[in-house]
Image (tube, rainbow, N blue to C red; front, side, top):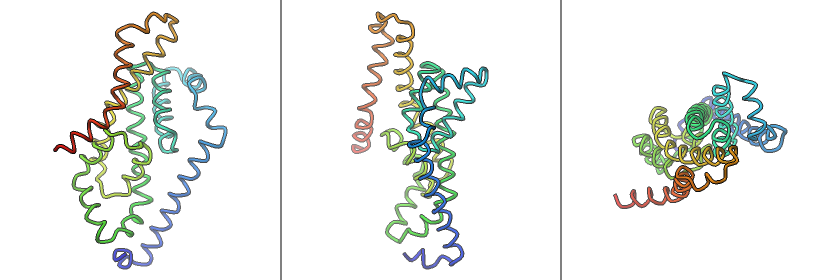
Length: 232
């Protein structure tokens, strides 16, 4: 704990205070989403009514909801599924990706602002070289973890505790989530279109078969990425 010993008492106290605030924020966020009436609004029907009332501003409001939801530890798959179900396969992808990017960026900044000082104070000589390596290869590290579907929200906050530069994190995230986001929104949006139309014959259409194939492929993507990385 050499770094912690060298840190001035005032700075140490400030870092501890910040990390306590971060921990309290996370605990409160999880509690609000999981154990209060807020979760009743996280359904396609409830969110759909809210967005219908928003009219022209519905896409922007959804992006805001997604952004806040990510920071409150609402599961990303739930928010993505709702976006695809409400806006369809294509526009759903656009709005979901934007919401995920704003949410990921906000969560990263919360983690960086409230937790980085404390995390840095705990890093000894053995861990400092890994933190430095992550900082040097920030874009590649973030991109790889996104492609193998590392848990979305914990990674957003967690990366803020490391030395990764924001723009490396931002572009690594933006590129890394495109494939998975498109596959999931395309699948949900396509199935939703068939359900809405009531024409079950469309279940054997090219679009549906392609969406199912993409969805199945998404489960194998992390293994493929890991294998390619291991062979390099």
